[in-house]
Length: 427
Image: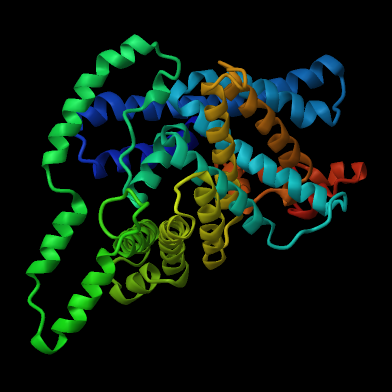
């Protein structure tokens, strides 16, 4: 029951708050969102309970414990048993999330034991590779990035994502031709509407500028309207880059600041000064600056390369992704870097799968999740000090605090230094 309650506390805010923000009705929340919360909570409860089941039964069958039966084998079987309970649309995202943590934990383990050298700024290099791959895929087939990342990139880069051919990557050609006239009609209707940059330009034109500043204002508006002949985006190049900067900062600071506002308001209540200090904290502003620099520099670099090379190809996207990735220095985060690396793997896999370059695995998400969780459970049992603090807190929260009280002093004889994180806890 503690696992089910922890799952409800975990997933209820993640599902209900976005539904309220999107303006969903009470009926939709009760009939769609609440069942999703219950299903995900049941998945977490089954996951934790089945791990304990396999852990204990292997010990009863063998009569003793081994390194494999204490973490890897029970974690693999528990993952393969529980993930099919979750919705198919969420399985891949959960698998990527756990793979992100597993990769980081394995890298820390190898460095901790001296089997790999410590490489400074490895998170920056990882993010550079990831952004180059994601930008290249986005410029070729943006729908291969997945709905969430493609929508984010499309909104930031002012690109309209096509109507998801990734849902039917191998649909027949006649069906495509049958839908083509309808799509052309929709494009014709949308072309009659003024584009967003033209609306912004019309609003700026209505601004009454003081006469002494009028020449400077016209000069700035002229610079914003300049556009490279190769660029196909609406509006000027500088105007697009500035829009990306403003949207990136608004998104990054809005997300972090909104979470800080909600938590600090519950903690400090009506102490406005402390609430504002929490909202405008340096990490929140740095995260907004990170997203602003990321997408603003990506757009600006692409436009400069189009102007210099007189062509628009994948090389521009790769270089723009590499240059923009340096923005991670403003808010270095290993979890973001590793997650984006796995999202780039997913995008390249989708790209190759659509062309028959790689085989399609129907249950590949279950296999990936099982391998990642088996590694995570092994490390969390024997070497919890090599886990990220955020994931360790998640495990401790889901297990109602029991995970940190395993008698790891008895495992120190194996040479893993298992009790380094909690040297005095035992059951």
